[in-house]
Amino acid sequence: MIASLSSLATIGVAEERGARLHPGNLMVSRTVYDDKPSNVRVGTPLPPNCAPANCVAATDDGTFPFVFNNVLADDYFGITSKIILDQLTPDGALVSSLEVPNSSQRGVPPSKDQMVASFSSRSELALNLSPDGERLTFMGYLAPVNAIDVSNSNTPGVIDPTNPDPNAYYRVVAELDKEGHFHFTKTNAFSGDNGRAAISYSRGDVTLLYAAGNAGNGSNPQPAGVVLGAGAQIMASARRALVSQQPGAPTPVASFNITQLPANTKPDKVGKDDNFRGLAIFHNTLFFTKGSGSNGIDTVYFVDTTGVDANGRPLQCPEGVGLPSRSAHLPNAPLAYDEATLVTNGLPSNMCILKGFNTTLAKTTTNVFPFGLWIADENTIYVADEGDGSTKYDASKDLYTNAAAQTTAGLQKWVFDQATGGFKLAYTLQAGLDLGVPYTVAGYPTGTNARNKNLPWSPATDGLRNLTGRVNRDGTVTIWAVTSTVSGAGDQGAAPNRLVRIVDDLAATTLPAGAKFTTVKTAGFAEVLRGVAFAPGTMTEHERHRKHF
Image 1 (cartoon, rainbow, N blue to C red):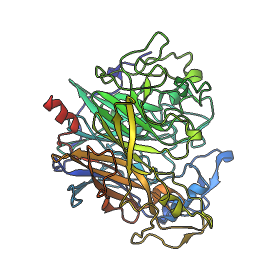
Image 2 (image 1 turned 60 degrees about the horizontal axis):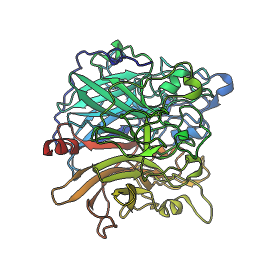
Image 3 (image 1 turned 90 degrees about the vertical axis):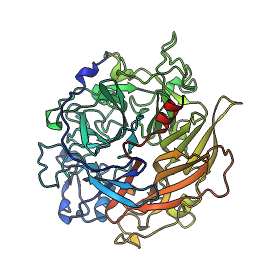
Image 4 (image 1 turned 30 degrees about the vertical axis):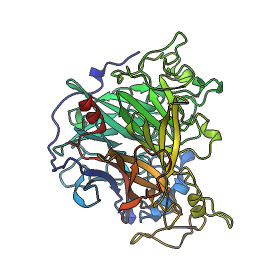
C-alpha cells in the first residue's frame, strides 16, 4: 500500500513573519523554559489525565531546574517551551534572534500557527539546511507553552490505548526560508515519542520533507499507526495554516530490521529498530543515525533506492551492510507495505548500515552513541558522539570521572579505506571539550541535588549532539557542534550546554596536534541549545559539488 503524496499535505499561503537572515551566518536553536512555580503543583497527578493506575504525584513545583526532578517519578515528564533561533556570525557574535510563533506571544491564539519544543527532550530541535540552501528545517509540537508531558503523548490520528501518557498532540515540521518566513506542516508520525530532525528537498513544484524520530510508548504489539509512524518519514510540505491541515496516517520512507544481518535471527520489538536521531542528504542519498534505546543497532545508515534482490533484500546490502550507489536517487514516495502483516512483521527493509560502521546490537554495545553527522565529501564523514550520559556515582568513579575517561565521545572522523572498501574511524577530536570538567552557569545551582542521590548539580560536557560544518579553501574544515552534558539534574537534558567550534585538516588521517575546540556560546539559566546549521541562502556543500561538476 502506497499513500499518494498529493494526499499528505495541502498548499496554501504562509503567514508573514519576517527577519533578515545573512548567508554564511549560523543559526542555533535554543529553547527557553518559562520559569514559573505555578507550572506544576506538588502532588499533582502525572501525566495529565492519567488513568489512576498510571498516575504518580509531582514531587517538585515549576521552579527551574528543580521542576525537572519530576522525571525521577514520572518517566515521561517534560514541559513545552518556546523556541528561539539565534543568528550568529561564525565567530559567535549575536546578530539577531527570531522567536518561533507560540502561545505566550500576544496575538497568537490557538487558531494561529505556532510550535513549541519539550524543554528537557535533548534529542529535539536539530537544524538542517536544505540541499539547495533555501530552507532551514526542524521539528516540534503543536501545543501551547507550559503543556506537560507532550513528548511521549500520542498524536491525534494514532492513539495507542496502552500509552500511559494519554494526551494527544500533533508533531510539526517547521521550515524557515531566507526571507525569515515560517511554514509549518503537521503530522501524525512519532506518536508516543518525538520527531528529532527534518530536512526539506524541492522536486519541481513539490517540496518534500524527510524526518527522523521515534515512536511508541505503550505495550507490544504496537498499533499499526505507531509502527508506521516510527523512524524515517516522508511528507509533502504544507502551505495552509496548521488549523486547516488534516494529516492522515503516517507515511514511512525507510526501515531497518536487525535480522538483515545474518548473525541476528531473532527480531526486536516491531518498529523499535527505527529509533533515529540524525539526518543528512549527500549525493542524492538519505543518511540516518541511531544512538539510543536498547533495541536495534546504534550506527550510521543510508536508504537504498536501487531496488531489491530476488529475496526482497536491498540490492546495495543483501546482508545489511553496504555502500550507496552512485546511481541512487532520493525517495519520492512512502514505503509500500503489507497491511496484513504490518503489526507482526513491521515494515519492509530498505536501509543499510554504512560499511565500516558499528554492526553490534545496542543491547551488547557500551560505547557507541552517534547523534548528528556532517558529510564533508564522499570520503569523509564527521559523526557527533553524545557520550554515555552515565550518572553512576561512587567513591571510585564519579560521573565527572566517567565522562572524562571516554575515548569515543566527541567528534569522530570517519574516512573511506580503499583497502577494506568501507569507512574506518580515523580519530576522535576531544581537545578543548573538557569532558567531565564541571562548569558554572549564573543562577544555576551548585552543590548537590538531594532529590537525585545527592549528585552534583554542575554540568560537564559528556560529548556532542548536533553539528554542521564547511570546507574551507585552504583544505581545512570548520565544524560547529552542540554539546551534551552530564550532571546531577533530574533530567540530563535540562542542564545548560554549549556551542563549540573546531578546525580540522580535511586530508588528515591521524589526529592533528593543534586541533582544539573553543566555546562559541553557553546556554544561560533556564535555556538549552539544541541544533546548529547555516542560515538559509548559504550555498551548501551539495550545491558546491553540483556546480563544480
